[in-house]
Amino acid sequence: MSRNRVTAGIGAVVCQEAELKGEVAIGNGTVLHPKCRIIAEGGPIYIGKNNIIEENCILFNKNVSPLVIGDDNVFEVGSYVEGSRVGNGNTIGTRARVLGNTTIGNHCVVGAGCATELNETIEDMTVIYGAQPYRRTQSAILPGQASLHTRHLEYLREMLPRFNHLKRLESTG
Image (cartoon, rainbow, N blue to C red; front, side, top):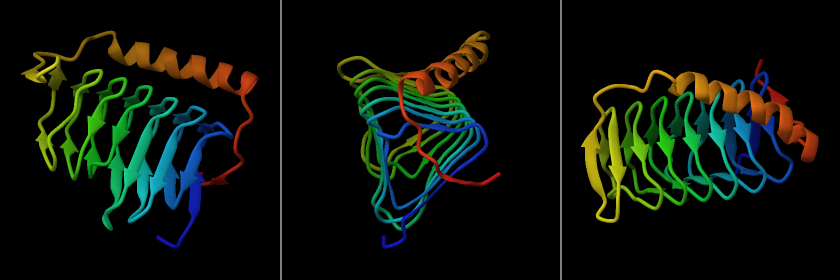
């Protein structure tokens, strides 16, 4: 991809040490920690609002079609995502891997150290966990999860700028 354009929505916090390459659009309120890597090599990466992308996380798009990330997701330390779509309200655990053109629904969890199969479709509310890894379906969304995510975002928006330089990016709003 020859085009290198990064835009950020209102209230997005992008640390200076985050690596951003290619066409990347960051949604309102999303937080990118230092040392995360967003690499749009083939096609663009569109990140929704209020996501948390932690240290050493890699979002990598080597396909021509866009990698679309929904809203309110958490990508924990060292996770790796190269899928085609991640829905809303998901947690990609520490050192978890989303491989190939995998599509992840809404409110899913890919547990710490777990991986998807190549080019898989993960249905809504799926939890991938354990050494095998095992899979199960959640029966309901935890009632306190949304408020916990909101408090986490508020804390990061306050603390990251105190201890890190922020990138100045083109605004989308």
